[in-house]
Image (cartoon, rainbow, N blue to C red; front, side, top):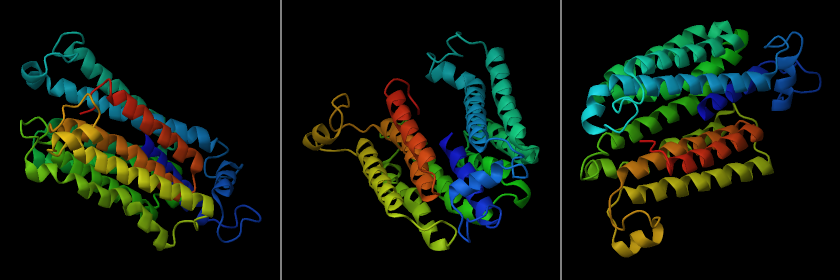
Length: 330
């Protein structure tokens, strides 16, 4: 959902900076409030519709497609789960395979309809996302295909809303690349580590130590400040971006501790008491790195001069973190 909000923010910023005369008094470097005014005017990008509601619809639509993909994944992994995870809803019999398949179709279909409700021109991109999700679910067991497909799914989650809000100008590729490509790399690195999370050794020493590399794509969007495509940082925004960068670095490094064999004294100090001191807990690290995606998006939204959406993304980070304490996200 937060990925979709970044895509929306990219489209709004790019559209406004491309039409500086659309709103009187905005000058050559219009602000995001001016972008909203231009887009919601009688001849604006969305034909008078509320941009805020469009962002909500797109974010929910992407979330529905993501949920549909997870349900389809469980349905296709039924035989494996019967052997390795018999407690899950489908192999345990709580949900029938047919009902799961129908739910996956409905969820992904509802997501595609929601995207088309904002702009039918985004339908090809929505179908591309659905196709990539299905391809991942069918082929994810093969690392050579599953990892790039998962990364592509995440990148398309930004492209689709950017296409829906891009209007006649289309997808603002130059600006979007600063956010979508690092996200894809982040997910690819995380997926490589996750491939071995169920093994007794936590996936091998090499994979365990790939975690710190996540800092590179996580912080890469900040480099967009030198591209000339973003508004200049105000003092308040600079503080917000710096705060989120610090939180992101601390969270990713903390997660690495779960994937690293540590002396009992060190583990007892830095890891929660419910984690066995010194033990390798790669799944725990993966869940923390998944949650960090919302932090990356919060930082990206702050860079895009969207403090409101940045706060939403930050709130969703806490929701995911609390949720992972009750429901395994990996």
